[in-house]
Structures are given as structure tokens and as C-alpha cells.
Length: 92
Image (cartoon, rainbow, N blue to C red; front, side, top):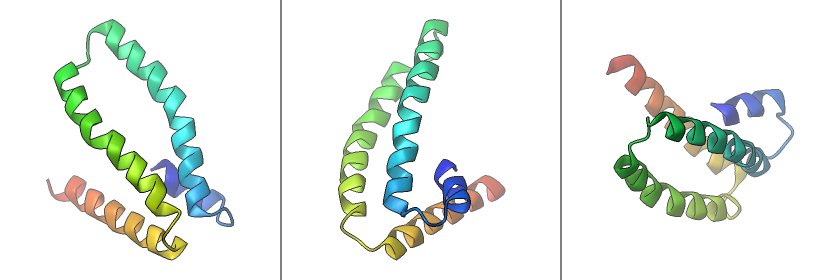
């Protein structure tokens, strides 16, 4: 959702830079939130492990691919993902 808002607010900035900036912004925020939840005992570490196993390689691959494909293609894929997630939220 952050990327979508940033694209609307800063339409002249390239999507690769928007995504990178959003991720760089999210890292310290999620670290603080994660530590807070860990201190409350509300973290499922087995689920966290599964999420990280898929997320870390996905982020690495995605960041490299986004610099090799056209900006229009990245926007198209992002739009498809947002449409898919939106319909899942509405219909499930």
C-alpha cells in the first residue's frame, strides 16, 4: 500500500526508486514493531521462519529483476498483485 501511495504522491519518481525507498523506510519500522511484539510474546517463530525462507530470496530476486525490466512492466505486475489482493479481501 505504501508503494501505491508514493506513486500517487510522487508520479515523476521511478518505480524502482519508490520501491527501494519504501523498503528502506519499512525496515526500521518493522524492526521496532517486531521487537515490540517479541517482548509481548505475540510472535509465532515457526511461522516467522517459514515467512523469512520465502521472503528473503524473493526480495533479493525482485530487487534485481526490477532494475532489468521496463518500468511499465513493473507497474503492470504491481497493479495485478494489488487487484488480486483486493479481490481476495472482498470475496473471502
